[in-house]
Image 1: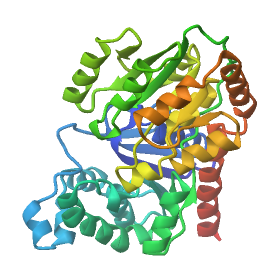
Image 2: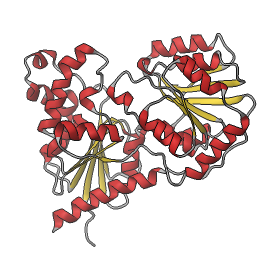
Image 3: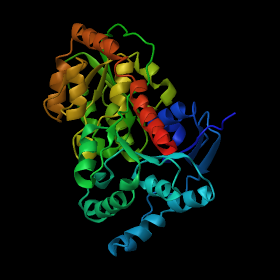
Image 4: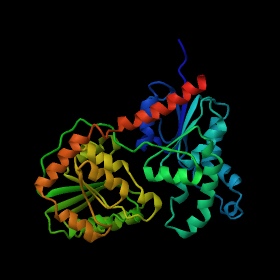
Length: 378
């Protein structure tokens, strides 16, 4: 029997909670002996898992080295990088998928037989460009990492067209779009509720300004409610949001549900909502998994004028787009909701669910990886 090719999938994230990485693992464990490296427990189906201790950080940059512009030393001294190199010492793989910029140099240095696929979840050089000090000090370091190592990958993918264009403009490589589309769910649109039930799920981050959505619902003339399912990324902000929710019977802040249960949980709602002020480059070009979660849950969708999200909402008739990122603009869209309109949006989501399923996006990774293997074997 011919041995199966070997693959390493690495990400400095908790793998069992990382929806994008889980799609890679689910696809490639069919054809490869997959080893994973990341935080937390072993994902299902892998032959080996290198579990990085949670105290080993991937972002503990040495500020003195950054000031001195000793970028190479700064990178290779990152705790997660040093731990990964030690854990991987002596191992060889046919192909490696490295998720996000920080993991790519480790993968490139390992020189896998058929090359590295760099999957870039963000445009890392502008990750926190709303912070002027970060932008001045850390952006040049990220640019150095991308220019020095990420450009040496054999192939690249990223999550939105805006990010792909920026990588190509600044570094010369073309990253293919593999969106964060959600796997297909065999669901149907539910009847529209009274009041109309809005929902938002995701990270409880201060700079997402989630309170704008809460205020728009709380002050709307329409008969609507809003439930948040949020992870406690910024606990103090989450408490503020809960305190605000306690002042109105229209808004609730609930605990997050496991990703495996999220879409079926969302299916009991009517409209998914996401107003994301473009405070950073990545926010401006966001095309998040939650948009596709809403589609698979057969919900209508309201978003702000974020170009990539708005493009999908308008192209597929999924809902409506606020004119700007303010409470007033979102409230206006909410007040235009009618049971008839919401029912139509939900039906359009149902009609689009197969076309927008994650399986079609995973096929792009499949084609790229098998192309690298075929090219390497020739």
